[in-house]
Amino acid sequence: MIRPMRFRLPCLALAVVSLSGLAVAQSPSGTPILASTAVMSGRDLTWDMAFLPNGTMFFTEKCRGLSVRLPSGTVNALLGMKDSKGYPDTAADLFCSGQAGMSGVAIDPNFDTNRFIYVFSSSSLTKPEANRVLRLTVNAELTRVSNRTDIITDIAYKPAASNHPFGDPGAHNGGRLRFGPADGFLYVTTGDTHNGAVPQHPTRMGGKVLRVDRDGKAAPGNNAPQGFDSRIFTYGHRNPQGICFRPGNNQPYTAENGPWHTDEVTALVAGGNSGWDPRPNVGGRGDCPDGYCGYMPNQMGAVEPKERSAYMPMTDTKLYPNAMRPAWTNDGLSQGMSSCVFLNGPQWKDWNGRMVVSFMGIGIHGTPVGNRLDVLSITPDGSSATRTTVSLPMPAGRFRSVVQGPDGNLYVATDQGDIYRLQPK
Image (cartoon, rainbow, N blue to C red; front, side):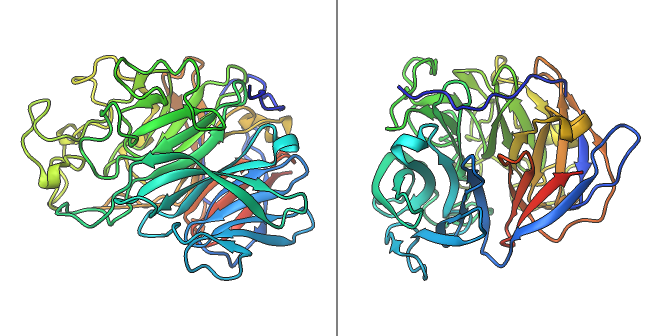
């Protein structure tokens, strides 16, 4: 039995404030003043972070591998990917291609006794390739990992270029790992891999949120529909790269990037359908390039329609009237929403208990680029959210991960290989 994680967050009221820089000025509403510190720089595509209570930070670099930063600032490389240099161990099957590579990292709630950590990575052990969740044992000195066990081996992967006009091999993997603070189970987000059949498919592990134990077996209470793989917690997703848990009731939320429109934040319900269905010839639509309608109606790069209603919806409530409704849709824009976390602590003032979501700043066909963080105020029932925008100079990075450290500060990783600490004064 997995014990719940040790830290519980209080239930607090939530409103959206946008951070478009790494320092925020005081506002009359009680917005905190933030100071920023570069914790690390000069790394390569830093993708995710996970902390021990003493501040030890495990982190992944998408095309290099897994490392750990000690409280002293020393960085120990642990497990490298294929052709990585400077690691005590490498895995020839782990590779980087397009959006794929090593992404999410999570620490077992019982790390003190079992020394387990988990990473999400693309692997060539099977053909076609697949995404996997690896369980590793860390030694007492935090210098090596061993006992690799692949607890999930069948997560969808886009293996090769196709006739579809968008996306390289390795597109849309999801890849975030987080342990539920109340139930102690591992939540795994997976992407649709530009495959129209995957998100609504009952047994293909793409476009899903999985909920499993430390051995990769289905957690009780997933409530997957009849005929579905029992590891599935929710399905019908596009590319959820963020999952986080609301203080108080520990409700899981996803942060998910959309197809030229409608990045979404959604409260998850066990067995729920998120309503993404890019298959051709369903719901009255016709055929689509390479069998994927995820960029309807202008798949071939035509000018975007003036009416947003012309798009294939991210959450299709006509096809799926009982689909989980999003709390927030990024004002109808797609800007690469990538991660989320709920802040906790009075030092965060008005942001205490609110959700932070990060953006990579993707902009296509005139969509404004948004390298930023947003602070969301979500209604208690998770049905809607509001935000107040703070206009600041844009940072130079693409935000990939946001995590609150054990010191109460917010840590932000970027594709440029930087990790910042944002500290409220």
